[in-house]
Image 1: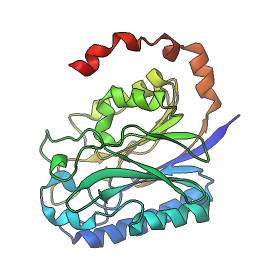
Image 2: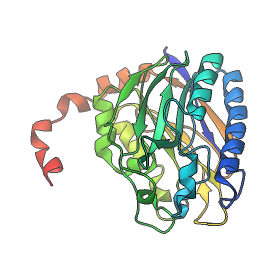
Image 3: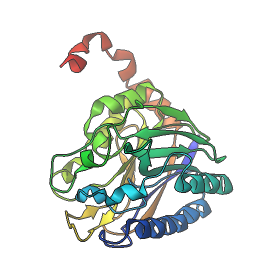
Image 4: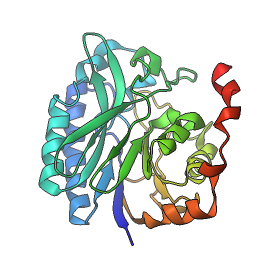
Length: 288
């Protein structure tokens, strides 16, 4: 059996959002470093942090002060720290931060670091919400422009999708076609409009593409915006779309699950979705 011990971290913000952003960043990194150390002690081989992990979900407002916590990838201090940490602990890390790629050019990005500390690449969020009060991402980010890469890591082939991306099956399919065995979706989503979709869409991606999915959501209510409760419930689902491990709704938590990657071949040998695809008939999807 090719068993991979995998982990997700969901966490509440340490400070109200009207605190100096640099203070929040420092505190959130310290908080997550403790949880990363805990994951390594539990034998986790690959670990994913939540969307924009070192801050609150600041797109709840529109103000330029959050530009001050952007960092280049991989040469910024946070990713350099995580590269050192991954190498020291022998763990693959997915680290979502606020990226700067030139003056005034910002992205919502997740970096992938292998267990030897090598930076493998990054995924930039492709689909940006700007449709509900409190989700003003087009104020802060350019749309991603790196496609849907999949990387060979110490534990297998890994892809990344980010939060609102999960509403778009096209990218989830592209990740599967690019060879992903597991994808991670770091998120920041609140109770209400989309909560009922939380356990429908991503298991559906897992079924349609016959890979594992790790879905992460933060917890708590973030003042002063109070746009709603981030309801946690981070989970792993298998290639059959079954949720195999789930975190609490309202607590900081490290979720750990042992995932049998041999199951991917077993399921694909049963359901021949990739064999039976008809890409020659799908032109209307991209022409519309």
